[in-house]
Image (cartoon, rainbow, N blue to C red; front, side, top):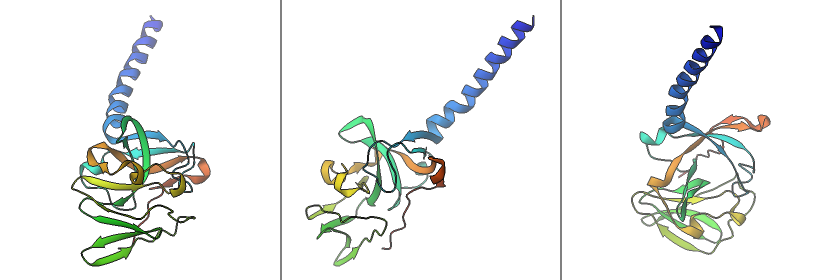
Length: 181
């Protein structure tokens, strides 16, 4: 009889765990393992972060936030990049610098957290509603909006909310940078 009690308790534990974990994992937060060097020095290959999937149900992404999203050219793949341009904005890349263009005013988006220059051809990108301009922090080696275009809003999974690995770099809102504009 004690054997039946063990299995009944074990099954109850599994069911309760599933009832709690599955909705959280599906709609609130999920783990993400950083792969590649496109976000160095902010995120290194092999770092483990938690993605907040709930925030963008209530508000839109902000410039400077680090997002995980489905790659527009192959939605089965996940990318991690920084939001640079917001819907309806115009971003200009000129002389290896980023500018936010509003009418006749051009404001440089300074990025003191980056070690190297942008090194990319000059271009002007005007974003439509529901589109974001995304860049990796390792601009020399990042496949980002300069290569594959803008990110449609419907491909956004969520923002990096906590870095859990390595233990020496545990922090909240890893990589977030408040641009002055």
